[in-house]
Length: 311
Image 1 (cartoon, helix red, strand yellow):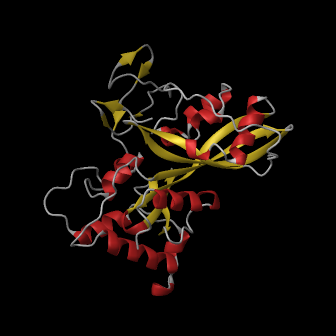
Image 2 (cartoon, helix red, strand yellow):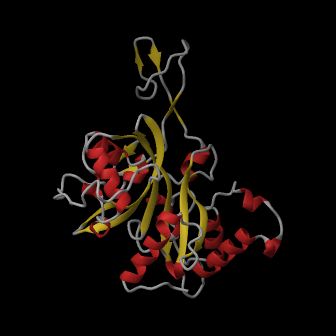
Image 3 (cartoon, helix red, strand yellow):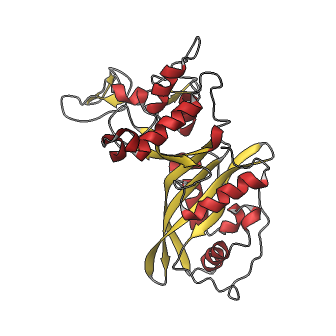
């Protein structure tokens, strides 16, 4: 976790070894016993790293630059294109290949940047919380064997608060005989929820709830309580036949203006191009960058909200 001071993120702390090779986390040049430590300057890449999704949104909206300093003065759309281009995973093999207009992914990025950075009507993301979806991969013990499953979530607002809610599950190993389990719901509690920043910590909050024996029905969006896979998971988990082991964030998707969906993944590497970066993008009309378990759910959300699909 980064060090927090006065409500703002600072560079991580690094410490030199003392003459004995030991480490210490004391203040600069403080000596206690046989230990001595000294604060070092953070590596340059750490300031440019996109630490949190909020950082990504601020940079995408051109509120701050790669150094996280505020951008003042008129916004140059050409410069903004370059800044947003730096928010892509630049080590993607599709970007290394040549081919000009025949390189589909490069061409798609150029289209995206042209529309988002239009000099007459520059676009911004609405909010770091709105229109965000997640795929979480998990492991569970079922019939004495370990199985993988995928869970899909959407960030929603309940009253004045934001939280994550489950909207789907892909667990082929589960039996989904509707006569075996009920579709009863639970009475939700304000003390049982998945916080809006849970994706920054691999949905540890949800993992703890499941390990404590809480039913996933506490965290399912009301519109999806009839989902057979979710009901099967809830039933077998409640009676102790299914035991969740781990959860890990796979990808995030954010809906942007002009009908684009961007996929975000977290890249942990020692370079400026690290942290939460765009790993794929597509138009909502195509949804090819979405897993099958989310494609219809995302489209249905926008249609039911009366927004339709922008072109």
